[in-house]
Length: 444
Image (cartoon, rainbow, N blue to C red):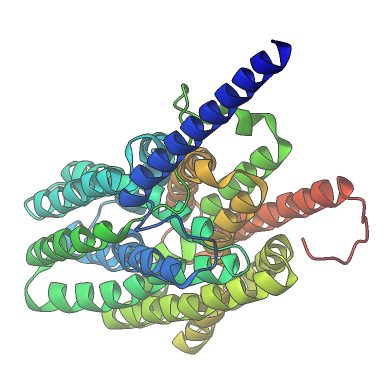
């Protein structure tokens, strides 16, 4: 009898295991037919480049607006709203970045919970509406609400799923994949800058905004179809990934993000006006932004390759220190346009690496299935930094540089980049301290 009971229990166990396995397979099949792609695929597979390249194209439109805002800024400051302070006009550009990054702690959670494509399509609709509505605005406060806040909010819905796709699909080549994807933001800055300047000159700023809105709707609408997850999101009760906030690594990455976005945008927003002060034209300002974005394309891909070989934290630390060394002397001492072109080329190559490497750092230290949520939480601090930095820089330029030069603005920018470098140095020390191998020179 005992033997019979044992056999019955064994059969029940086998049947239960089989049932659970079938349930698991069914669940996996459902996920495979959804946003996880045609099948559950391993990392570093060729299929991963399809969603990664879709992210690259969408980044052109997400970041292209902020990277090329310098063209609109120069137009607003010197033509449409002459006499309006730089600090007032800077609200438009700074709110794009602030809402795009600051709201991603909610849109990232939405992406993990409801799906990447749904979240991205909400962003497409909002960004398109922002451009169209901005084209009918005749007051600064109206542009702040449309071109600034509404577009930034829409960009957040697009950005949150985008930032977590490349690290999810790659392991060995994670840095390269992230660099290729984020290079799209610089490519967008290239053609956005050239196209925006050309359209403002030929058809006016209003129609330039409308054309950009139509392009955003069509292109991002198609690219969103290829937003596949590799790993299904885990069911969870909380909107935020609160466990991440219990780790020092999360807070150090967040502090670095805050510091970088506080100091990073000064050159993008004011290089065109610097060119004008040195006798250049509006076209010179546009050309400088083109060089800046071209340098960023090379720098972000190169940084990804270097990070895969030597470590993402090592690469980021070096790039932040080089940014300070490049920015201060070349910008402060510039007396003609030639040094500005050198500045934009070098600054573009080394400074924006944090945009591509921060997701790699997060994905190396947090679970893949919650990347959108964790990145969204760190980007909340990025958004705050962008708002604080851009506004303070505008006040410094108005009050202390008095629209005559940029020395004080440059020092403010460089010191926050240097502080970001010190934070990453602390993060490096924290990670090495927890390892058994405590050598100073190692891949981190």
